[in-house]
Structure formats: structure tokens, C-alpha cells
Length: 402
Image (cartoon, rainbow, N blue to C red):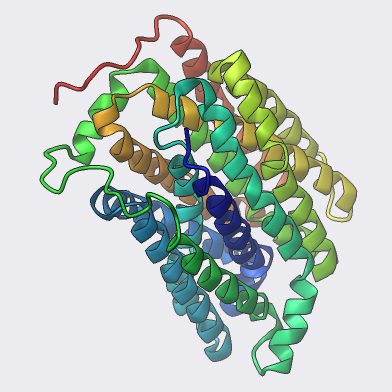
């Protein structure tokens, strides 16, 4: 089982990390639109964040193998802190390219938040992985739901200290990431390497291991597809609402209920994963995602409540697929390659979401929010097919021969 003190510290770190990430999510698209002067480029801020998190997932996983979880999580939070500083600099000097680079570094906050769910289940038996993993995912709720509601306050604080209002919430991000980095220093067992310095296993071996196990393929597809659908729609929602005259406060509330959907019921998703099995839970998530995307597609610029409902359901569907997909991926591969597979999973998940985010801006600009939501439904098809396939003839993991 997880060491008694590890889980509370991971939970505390996730609360702080959630504050850091969500403070930026609520206004990142609006800041990008202002600096670039184009709605079609507004999604690139969050896309850069997602892409940065994806590219950092593999080296941070490797650092966890060599130096332990404390080093990996701590460095990730410090990189995210540097990204927050860079975002403020980009806003002050009105430089869009600097914003994109800074947001890529800011994405490290998401990368370590995702890695923390795996840190929670290091050494945990298979019957309790879903619940243990979901507790850490749930912890993000507290900070992530609160932070966007203070977007207006962050704007006023920014103006008071002489920076643009849209950059103000990133001051909260910087403080939260600094505290989260400090917390990881005290993580029990966090300095224990998870692999060997001279390990011959590479990401190619990890990819081969995933392809060799239908459950791993299904888990990875569920994570990547649900994340891409969520990011593609969520990243353009503030812009969609802004075009309809919504205030920063309204946008913050909508993002808050979306994030609540993502994290608040994750313990329930973990319990369902352990009791029903991950495949059934993934299929439940697909059904909720479908309902959310249809509701979003039917919402107009001024229908803030319907957009809020659609985004809440979007978060719930994401939660089911993420918790169950993560447990299925980790439980389907051999122990000796598991950490690499986890890093690979977060890389693939981030790259697909980054692609969705990059396409979201042009689609919104050319065809509207409804078309964007309907297009995301296509991502649910491979999740469903591969999940159903994995229920037939999934092999139990064996020691890798690589």
C-alpha cells in the first residue's frame, strides 16, 4: 500500500498544482487572442501548454526512474513557475511568440500533476489502484475549482502591480507552483529511484510493450482520445463565451464547474474502476462525453448555463476515461517497463490534445463552436472499439523479455 504520509503530501501538492494550472487556463486563451489579435490563434496558448507538458512527460518520467519522484515532481513545478514568469513578461512586452514559449514551460505543471497519479500507486496492489489513483486526481478539484473564480481578483491585483489584467492570475500560479515544489521535498520514498541507471529499456521498448497488450492499447487510447476531446472544446470555450459578452467572472465560473466535473467525482470513478473493471468505466465515460458534446454543439453564444452544463459533463466523461484508462494502462504491462509506459502514455495523450487544441481555433473561427463540438465526437469511436476489443482475450501482464 501507499506509505501513510505519501498520500497526504501528494494530495496537498495536487491542490497547489491545481491552483497554479487553473489560474492560467481561465485567461490563457483571452490573453493569446489579445496579443495575437486573432481569435483563430487564441487556442495556441493552451495548445502550447499541452504540448509542453507532453514533451516534458518523458524526461520527467526518466528522472523519476533515476532520482525518484521527489526530484521529478519538484523540477516540474519549478519549470512551470518559470513559465508563469514568462507569461507575465510576454503580456508586459506584448509579445505573442514569448507567450507561446512560456506557456509550453507552464505545461510542466500539468505534466507533474498527471505523474502524481502514478506516484500514488507505486507499490499499491492491483485491487486498490483505481481508488488510490483517484484520490490524488480528486485533490486537484479544490485548487482547480477555486482558482478560476478569482480571475477577476487576479486581474485587479495585476493592474495594481503594473501588469496587464489578463496576466494577473498568473501571479497566483507562480506562488502555488513554488509551494508545490517545496512540498515534494518531504515526499516519503520520493528519493528512491524507480529504475536503474544502466537500464537498457527505451521508449521503443515501452511502445512495443503497449502494442503487445490489448488492455494497454485500450487504456492509452481512452486517455488520449478523451483528453483531446476535452482540450479541443474546453480551450475555445472562454473565447466562445467572450464573443457572447460574458465577463471574466462568468467565464471563471464556467471553467470552475468544468474542472469540478473533471476531478470532484474521480473517487467514484476509481471505485467503479475497481468494482466494474476499467473497460466498463471507460465506456461509461464515452457515453457522458457524447452527451456533453451534443449539449455544447446545441449552445449559442449567450447560453452560458447550457455551456456550463456541457462543460461539466465534459469533465465527468474525461474523469471516467482518465482514471480507468490510467489504471488499465498501468495494470496491463510488465513491472520492468511500467514507468516508461506511463511516461509514454502522457506523451501520446499530450500530443493528441495539442493537435486538437491547435485545430480548435481555426475550426471555431471558420465554422463555429457547434461544429467544433460535433467534430470532437469522432474521437470517441476508436475509444469505444478498442475498449470493447480489449475485453475479449486480454492477456495478464508477464515479465518483459526485452
